[in-house]
Length: 232
Image (tube, rainbow, N blue to C red):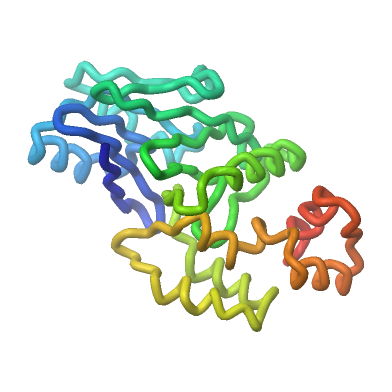
């Protein structure tokens, strides 16, 4: 099973998860490029789903479904830990509310398609206002193997690393992260995120010290998470 990334608009990403004959589209805004790839590789579009229902992620749904037998899978109806199969290979559904209440992440092969929950170098805004659920979602993703690839819904790498450097100016891992950044194929390992992404580093000594300096409580992990979310 393979994953193909397509950029559209300024910084959005669509994904095609596919094998020899069949494919699943996730957040299909890059309509023309996806259709071209499907035709060139003689792939049948079996399913289309979304990481959440914000319009910048759903705008390609109708056009991609027209003239095909593909099935749209409403992310709001997909049960936790359910699977979508492509040629017998499972793609697991993880509920990751926080950015929105309906946000999901898809686990395919050694990768997580995280939508606007976890970006490369940062996380999404908590539009749901449910900070506790967002914390639980990030903790859930952090439990995956460190070699897991992160494929996000947007490319915010440069701004994210500027913010990370503001918080941890002596973190040399930020330089390595930026050197590995390729706008033509934006991805990172979970291990990389643990080294640079402030929102995954709430247990590190440097972030704890920063929070103490800013006057935030740091006794519990959730307090540290709340402190990180309040930093600007």
